[in-house]
Image (cartoon, rainbow, N blue to C red):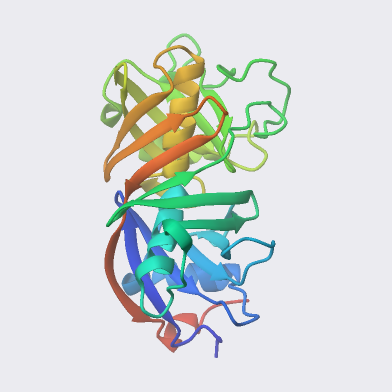
Length: 296
């Protein structure tokens, strides 16, 4: 039987991004890829991201987070999930730890993430600095200017999408800016083709974005390892950075995703701040049977 059987979890969402929070502090347990897939396959614990909280690794941090996609792969960052973890560490009776001034420092494999509470159900996450060099994103071949890279889908003389911006926010993003409603594109078909394109050696999150005013953007996202999603915090951050680099907007925008609105600010110190809501749907425990087919 999996040691995760009967362990408690929280079911949450951040701007529609389905999040499961699992607390493994005080244990040596790690979630395997097959266990993550099993958790995501169960309707009671279905998620876009599974946020697993471990004991701190670096001095001065409050916890270490491992982030899993529905296919069992790990991600380096998830802004919406980080807000949910921050809520749990503040307010959940079983998970809460005192946090001075409503501030937390969390760690992922992509680095440190500072979070502060700005409302009862609202948090601001410092997502760190964007990575803009081709080998940091990473891309499979050199592009001196990642504001637009050579990539298209569809006929050469009439592509459906072309020339995306490339940005890393702890995970790779390709953002296609378009002149019409992003809902008019079949992202469910396009997304998986581009996610696995050879230009992205670590795969990529694929976004379609429409700048609707100097400080608003409409966005749809195909998330690497998860598929179509109602929200993706790192994609919203990457999109604002990309749009600002192209002088389509300033350094702040409200990004409207199918699940809700995130406020993104690319500060003068190069850090990207994301502010948005969290919502607690409920809690549960993992039924032992969901892990029976887990293959380790």
